[in-house]
Length: 587
Image 1 (cartoon, rainbow, N blue to C red):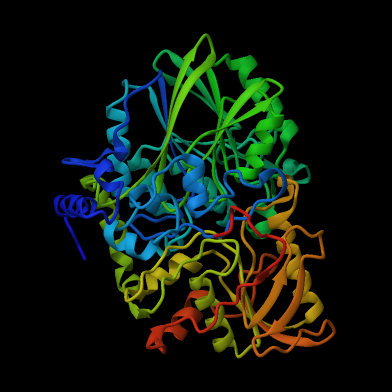
Image 2 (image 1 turned 180 degrees about the vertical axis):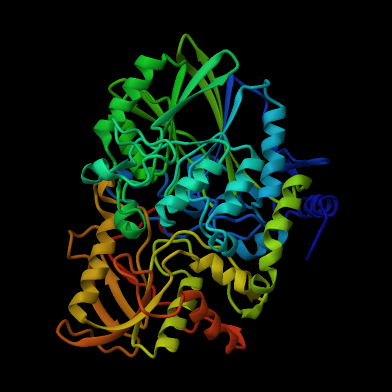
């Protein structure tokens, strides 16, 4: 159903009057949604989006029903889903806010409220929030994972997103998937970007410093080894605000080092404290914020150990957290936020500074509903022009979706299962493995699955597939390693993704067990138990080490879907969970 904005608002009013979505009547006015009423507060407004994954057009996106937390993270953001999340943050159930922040009643609510995100609609919201605040006192920051995640971003090597961000007016950004292009391409894009790319933890390796081939490109600092500036100071009226950048610490481990062979990353907590102190001492700013791609659990730990940061605007783990979380540290307190993914949210923090101290703040995580925000005409025209050469490929209809197809969640999503099934069938294998990526859009039942949807799920710069023999022991080691990355009790050892997705294989998992002891009861779909010493034929993709020999994953999935009358989930290879009863991160 395609509705114009006025028709959509009228329909929601009728739904609220009928009691279908109780909070709609409270959230929607004659001229749009009160979701976007933001009375000005303080003297500095920070606008933050992150992990948009190159989604220029509005999309559907289902929030997770599994986001497990344990120990100190149990029952705390971001490890809350569904009704537990609504209760924690005082969000009314049954309405547009419920749909924005949770998976509850997803299909019905998605058909009612429509798509989210889209840079043309995000642009309208950004302009509105800037225009309603004091001139020159707002800053738009981008947490990264912006240049990757769509077919057009892949084909233009991220250039389409750089141009879109320039048009959007992004002032400062940091990165993660940006580093999965070649080093020279990254630096060229950073040069084209009209804002500033900052990263305190991206440095040239010591053994590469003396013959670093890209030394004359970008912001390379020969003395410190920083590839980009570690921080910048921006004038906001009579205030000066320092913005420190933190890129994804595990980039060379989670993604191919071969693309950026001379660069190193890391959490670098001591370096962070040193940079914060340096910026405070040398620049004497009124305030200092961190633009982070650590992941929220890492940010929460860092906030407790590094002093001098007023607020952390975080990304990477795609957590849409409706409030700023205050964290105590030796120097006072730091606010920690995370602004979701796919262009679905815009975080807004109004900060009140006086005497170089943050006295108070107001924070809102605003969902970007394309039916409630008119498309900015200039951005819409750019998007149309940027996508036009690729539309014949993107718009190819492969088949129809029979189920809601989604990815986000600690374990197999339904679109992940489609990918795994395609790998098994096309590779004639017993088992398939697919990475636990958190990006990827959602498809509703009876909606055509297009090549664009497939690209949204698979579009990386190392997409090659493989089919090889693996022992049962090696398969278990892979599962144990990923489980430790996800459920390690120390956030600094977590890498922020989800469990590897599987086809043809079931297992049990105890997230609270020790390293190497979480995975058990491995068996094939027919019930045959996995033998540690036996070889199994395994299909997969996205190898981080060396390039695989097979076709790109999107071709494999597309070939599979073209032959299917509908994309139907025959079996979801979701593991049996142990020792997680009553966990508020589990629906």
